[in-house]
Image (tube, rainbow, N blue to C red; front, side, top):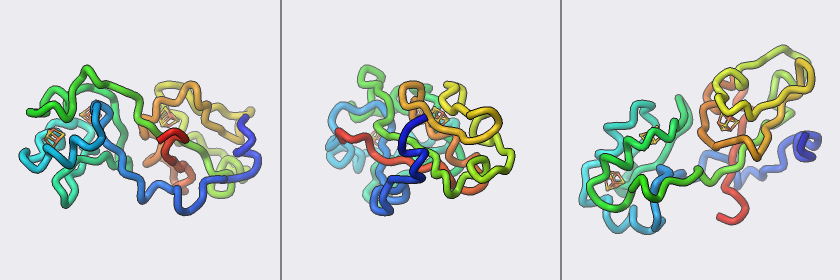
Amino acid sequence: MKRRELLGSLFSDKERREDIIIRPPYYKDIYSFDKHCHECNGICSTVCQENIIVITENKTPILNFSKSGCTYCDECAKACPSDVLNTEYKQKIALEFEIDMLQCLSWNNTLCFSCKEPCLDNAIEFLGMFRPSIIDDKCTACGFCVSRCPTNAINYKKERDQ
Ligand code: SF4
Ligand code: SF4
Ligand code: SF4
């Protein structure tokens, strides 16, 4: 168990997920979105089978985990007509995830495994039947657990070196 689970959420409000821009995980140059996406009609968003790519007002793509997560299927990268997304640049989404023990049902003695089932990487471990925590080394930052939590207890923030 990580120390931060014992202490509740250490993510500050400023770091919390609403304001974070998450790009599809296939770029080399973070500035390429602003340089080239305005020439395109958001093709990447139309091929994402999980429907998590949203085109913003400035015509660049971001991921939204509010309904689903990223399968790292490569389809957005294969469809990109420029070199903004390319399977050669495939990378882990640069986020750290944590469970807020104050919001989590299981940390408050109510049985709940809603986040465990969608986590195909088996990155959410329970202590017996309760007290889940996310194992950083196993978490692929796919985001599938986020929308499945009935109390919005799963937070994410940018990795420290971002
Ligand atoms: S890799 Fe697949 S699931 Fe992930 S954003 Fe791209 S198209 Fe969607
Ligand atoms: S398909 Fe490529 S160029 Fe078009 S919006 Fe998506 S990332 Fe930008
Ligand atoms: S974001 Fe991490 S903990 Fe959540 S489902 Fe994906 S791999 Fe599992």
